[in-house]
Amino acid sequence: MKTNFDIVLKAKLDDTSYRKIAALKNPKVTEFMATFIEHCEPSSVFVCDDSEADIQYIRDKALSLGEEKVLAKSKQTIHWDAYNDQARDKVNTRFMVYKENLERMKSLNSIEHEEGLKEIMQISKGIMKGKPAVVLFFSEGPTESPFTIPCMQFTDSWYVAHSELILYRSAYSHFLKMKEAEKGEFFRFIHSAGQLNERGNTINLDKRRIYMDTQNNIVYSMNNQYAGNSIGLKKHSMRLAINKAGNEGWLCEHMFVMAAINEDKNRKTYFCGAYPSACGKTSTAMIPGEKIVGDDIAYFRNINGEFRAVNVEFGMFGIIKDVNAKDDPVIFENLMKDQEIIFSNVLMGPDNNPYWQGMGVDTPDSGDNHFGKWQKGIKDASGKEVPLAHSNSRYTMRLDYLDNIDKEGFESKNGVMVEGILYGGRDSDITVPVEESRDWKDGILLKAATLESETTSATLGAEGVRKPSPMANMDFVSYPLGEYTMNNIKFGQSVKNTPKVFSNNYFMRRPDGSFVTSKLAKRVWLHWAEGRIHDEYDAYETPTGKIPMYEDLKALFKKYLDEDFSKEDYTYLFTFRCTKWIDKLERAKAFYAKMDPNTPKEIYDYWDGAIAKIKAAREKFGDEIKPGCYQD
Ligand code: SPV
Ligand code: MN
Image (cartoon, rainbow, N blue to C red; front, side, top):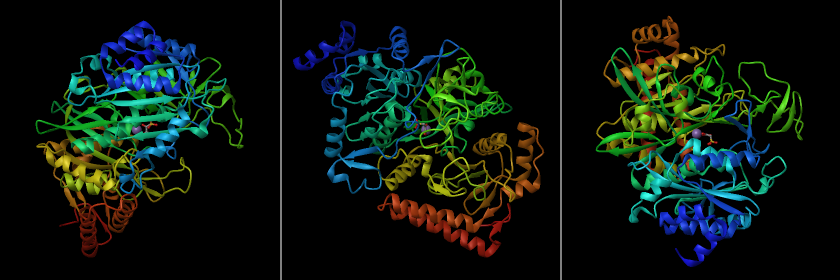
């Protein structure tokens, strides 16, 4: 260890922590720690290994420092973020880009590298003064596997540390075992919640910055606490991984991993799925009767020619709004148990229990929440009524608490072989509930790249506006969209068992505005896709893919939901709407042109080909083509 680093570390680490770092014999770890100890000036630094004792130390510290409070059930805790720190700060999240790449990264929120570094170093100078900090080691994906990305987190938030210990696999021993050649290859995260008020919340939100250096694999996150801003291992790491994957020929996707279970046929088929927020991602991963591997982030690798995926995470950071006994029985039941869960930004009632919107129980009229002392009807400084919990309030929980977890897939070092990919958007009148793509490229360009979500009454602004959301990944794609889309195409074509690609849309409405099917119908669409993968159903052609036949769906509705699916609903749901599809493709073209002016011509040519095909179909069969009435 360099002597000056050694002096810095010895001044802030006790003997045990110092020995843990020395044992790693990793100069990059030492340098990172010493640099930010000197710069951020924490009062001490605790080094966490993989032991239960260390993890308990962190849980206790989050409580004694007031970042979390114990709830009525003693293993459950609650944490509040500042009133204006309740979601990802998109404006202040930027990529640090070297001058020569600024043009290429123009449409992604970027800052010139030197300028960004100067700003973030200024903001973080002495930011941890008087606060104890902690250093932790994690793995994205299973440890010691072909998927592993080792990560190091340095933070002064013990809530962040605690959350990460629930959400990721601890990997101090992985770092211990690293071979010399591997020691420089890991992601580094430095975070500070900054100065706190008496409630333990970040004061200097105007200086909230999240700066990502994808070239050196470091993320600097300052003056925030909301997990999407503070937790290095989640969306910061994801942006670094997307870039790394692009350079190395694999993929990091904003997807769940799950297994569809066909009991009659005794088979298990793995699916991954991307859905923009509020389009059914978690509820698809949690369909009753199926099995979950992960709900948010997946890595895909070609392993011996197979398309294989892992869930990057170990836990879930789920939206709690509308989780109730009826709609999400498995999660709800777990949230009611006395087990380790961090509730964030919900209400702590007078009985010290957590309460949230859409919980399906009577909720108290007062308590403590992200606003402070809360009473029903209370207004914030801008005169807006404060709800009992924020709509982005969450629970942080290990996945292996769930009894529908697919242990085999969850624990597999080589991931699972994926046979189906689902891209699910939200629109009330275009995309059919399930449609299979002709091939992989068609899937990426017509299903993934054209994904859209429609604004609802729950979001600000006008209702019914279609917002493009390619691969449901736009907030995290860390290099130009056209290149990323081409890498998606290439990856699927590089494997032997290219998965089948399907689109989903759970939100088709009748002209009177009512939904055509119940929330449970997603199980039927999934099982039709499962059957197609195993060559079981015939399908009708459409200009954009293949759709189910009525008799097959009728049988599936009966089998899985004991419902009689009517021919009228089928025809309405699966009608191909030519003009609407043409408009959708035009929106995708405009979005790509805006987001990446260098999008390859190949992509636009493909869409123009699809548009020409739909126009020809419209000529021949009319604007609305009923299922079975289209021919190529
Ligand atoms: C998402 O917004 O996609 C999330 C939550 O999974 S956050 O951690 O805020 O990104
Ligand atoms: Mn997510």
